[in-house]
Length: 230
Image (tube, rainbow, N blue to C red; front, side):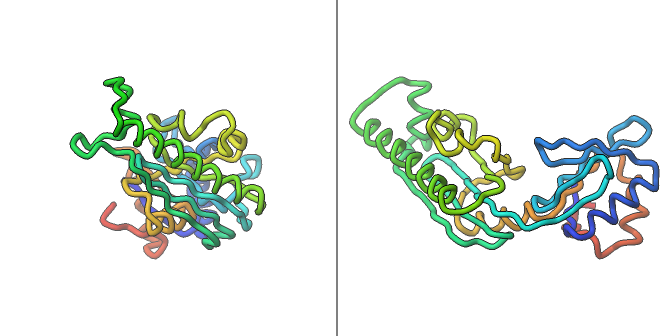
């Protein structure tokens, strides 16, 4: 069970939670706050990407940021540059990487079968060009704009091809932020959707702990996009 809430309302929620005996533990690598009550974890709050949390004071501050989103699946990818949440530039890439009969990418096929026929070599050639184009686009953004973070989504099978030693992503791994949503098709529309989602906060409540937050959302019915989640 989870809930999405507007960025401006998170400070109010955290103040309420603190007043009701809840404690916070910030995980900077995931940009999340773990919420505990009487030594038990009851929820996690994924912060909006434009928010900065100050653990010492428990305060949030919001500031404009520039970011790149990179979403990759076998044979398709979408890369975009955003300023303060607004898309300035984007590119969708496609490549002939999937074996039609098996529906499996050539990279995955070779990992299990080890064959290299004419069609396989074509698909592998397309794969190399595919990842080079992605990294060239990311490099172009990094060389042109100030970038605060790079959001990425890519299956682990493709990591060795996307995160090569000389790749823009590997060289700027300190900026990487793993997109916390599953992406089936990395289209332009999906790029815009993910950009909107990471600017919201997401509350995931542990099973059986819903009652801890019932009073808050009863008093603040407009603070959530419930989407049948409660």
